[in-house]
Length: 246
Image 1 (cartoon, rainbow, N blue to C red):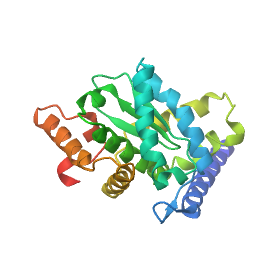
Image 2: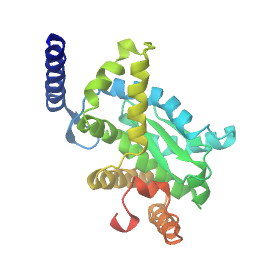
Image 3: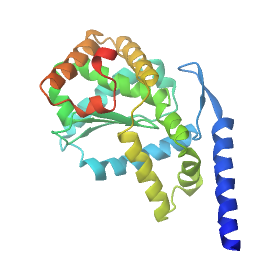
Image 4: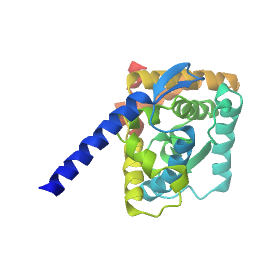
């Protein structure tokens, strides 16, 4: 009985801490000019992204074995990044090409880890379209959408403990499980319509600042719409709004 009461007390205490942690952690985002409730600091987002990168590879396969293509993806991503206000963010962005020819998708982890699959890259016709994809994902990172969603799903409090900078060398299996759970949710995350429209707007601004043709964004939506009309909607549409609604 005493043990049950202790567990109940600890459960309530943890729940209260989680609520206070969510409502009490408000930070100003200078890029979006919004006040956001996030449980992770930018430093912790970076650690989560770096640890999550390995989890992505274990779930989705290896990086595409071409240093030339990897360098190309990184060059376009950095060009979009460095010529925009996103370069002022604290995140060390890295761009990765996943060897997943049957998956048409792109996504970002908090902290600046951005992934695009070979399946999506093959569907693109121009560099402007690629810049549009990467700009959109950069938008998610600098707007801290992933960190916001994790906080709302009450994972933030656990991640503060699991991904704390001081314990980043901790080999505890529970920490790995929490990271895996968080990364899995981030990969399959359905952002809100507001988040997606904000990332569209930011990505549009970023690619224009990098001197890419903004028509690439419209062409990108047409590619996704055409793929859907063939009866095989890309995975990108399962985590992003329908092109007609954007």
